[in-house]
Image (cartoon, rainbow, N blue to C red; front, side):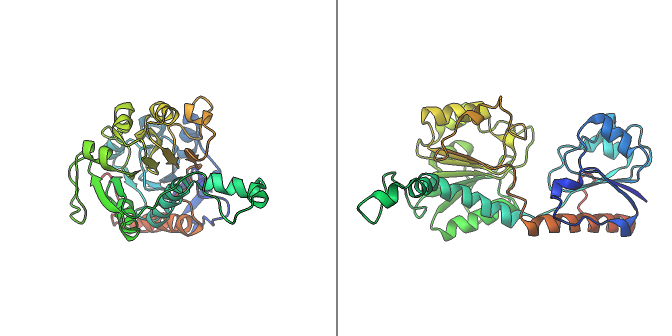
Amino acid sequence: MKIAVLERHSVGPDIPVQYEHLGEVTYYRNTTTIQEVRERVKNVDIIVANKAPLGEETLKDAPNVKLICELATGFDNVDLAYCKSRGISVCNVVDYCSGMVAQHTFALALALLEKLPHYDQYVKSGAYSAQDRFSNFDLPFHELEGMTWGIMGMGNIGRRVACIATAFGCRVIFHSVTGSSCCRDYPQVDKATLLAESDVLSLHCPLSDLTRGIIDKDALHRMKNTAILVNVARGAVVDNLALYEALAAGEIAAAGLDVVDGEPLQTTNPLSLLKDSNRLIITPHLAWASVEARTRCVEEVAKNIEAFQRGELRNVVNP
């Protein structure tokens, strides 16, 4: 089988990607344009991709494609209905980075809660060395213990975050956007209650028509002005302009983001204007990207291909 790996560098050049035992493989560092996708998939049987657009426009002249494997959990770059109509199976990678994303959720939340950017700079500026006392706490900070941690999206990552938050002594509540969550370990609340009661609100929901812009101007207005928002889901789940305005006006205390609407961060995104790291921390979509998680991702794609070649369904999202 001919295999095209369209975005080999999406998992980083430090991680080996070796699928030669599965077929005749062509690796591309990155593939971004529709024309590039068309040209590179027209004669292949299997596509390995991450963000490259895969739908009728890019696949109509690729009659041999039988399988699309995502180097990721998300698959919003693929037109599932079109692929199903063509008999093309689409597979993703499940739960390979849940622990890392949960870890990064707390890295962001704790840095903001404890004002770490401020205190790090205070020491490095020489101000600490120049003072006549052993400690400094000019910006007040608070304990997680006793706070309410709200979660939107109680899947694999949300459950891990809930477990860690509980260990910190938080009361955990969650909201299911679809209303179909089977989780009974924590109180499920409506959206209004989640927004009103959360001291920290972390987002772990997939991007869909239901979740796009779900944290909008009205939602931010309903949150506590002491609340911290953490988004490690998808950038478009949050209205970026509304978030900028809420932070600028002090409607919420701070936000930690690993994702933004339009990546990489565009200079036209108003969030790029806010340079105060005590109120806003943005990391470059790396919450999933520990060495261990990226290695698992590559290995799981190989397992998906191997299963397909044996005639088995594994992690298929369009059965």
